[in-house]
Image (tube, rainbow, N blue to C red; front, top):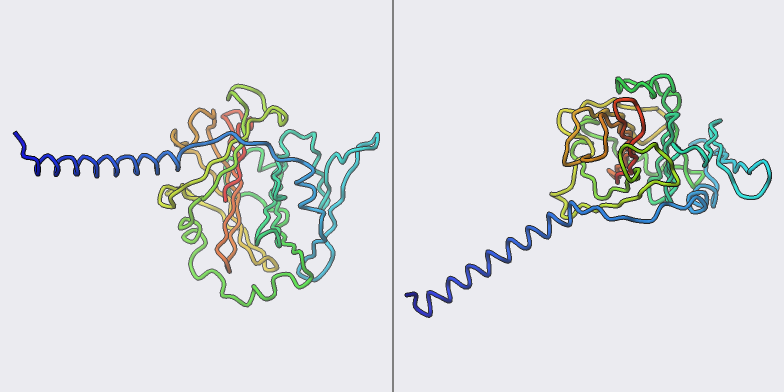
Length: 281
């Protein structure tokens, strides 16, 4: 029979063990739980784009045109860089912050606390096939809220390491995903289910680029941020379980001065049907 002191020691050990187990479970649950959330609002997205003027590095005004419905009334879409994005296009997925992506290969990212946008477009013929991440980039531009652009930021040192190593050292802090309620349903924006996920603590977060995945660097001498394109075909069940995807195209940007990294991933099945879109920050 245990003495009172021994009983106290056993009780203390059990208490500590239980506390450690609960803490570990809480961290795992916090890192993996995906919660339903409200869908982005088009008027909020639109306000993020047009509430203030945008300028390129030369101080020229970047034009963002609101396109009204033919019968008048509400704004039907936006046009910039000669591309029209119609809100009736189910593959046009937008976010409150002003970021968006389309099936035509246009990706737009809001960076630097809303002061900078990076936009690039890949060739239609190759983006629909997606057999390779060596995609033709039609344009890659950067615009700013101020006419001076990022001239002060550009005084900072550029990336000192290879872009692949730099990105692979970054981890996702939050995910905003949209998908159909069931993976066998046809994609329809108005019926999308929206989910959010925060990765806490940092060590439980997923990387922007998985080990063994190659990427294509996207760079332009007039753009300070660096873009990348990667294609994931080795689908992990724990990451994309139940989404019905066979490959994922990831397009992202990283700021060399701040290290800020953002990515939009679009998942497809073996027939190239869109199955999910997510914004990773």
